Length: 84
Image (cartoon, rainbow, N blue to C red; front, side, top):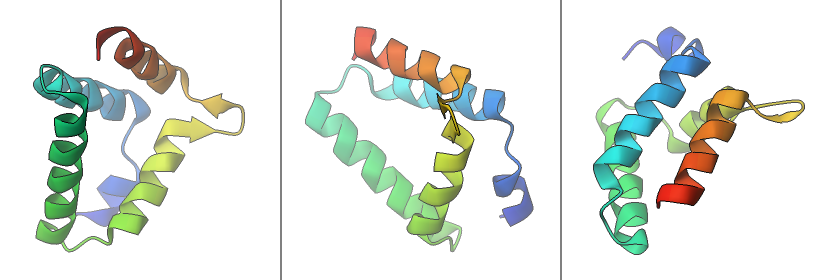
């Protein structure tokens, strides 16, 4: 995995891919969604030899800016509130 690509993932790309993942689990029960996504995240980090805490810090910077959620991820949050 190219760490530079992880660090420079465009916000729109990240939000779009997030929506695709949400679509894949939206029919699961809430507890199943959390376990499935958490397990996937941990296994992906293991697969690509990435510290999960580091991945979360990087992702937090993609999702948020000084004023709060970036608009793309505010839209994802709103979608989740209405659909999940």
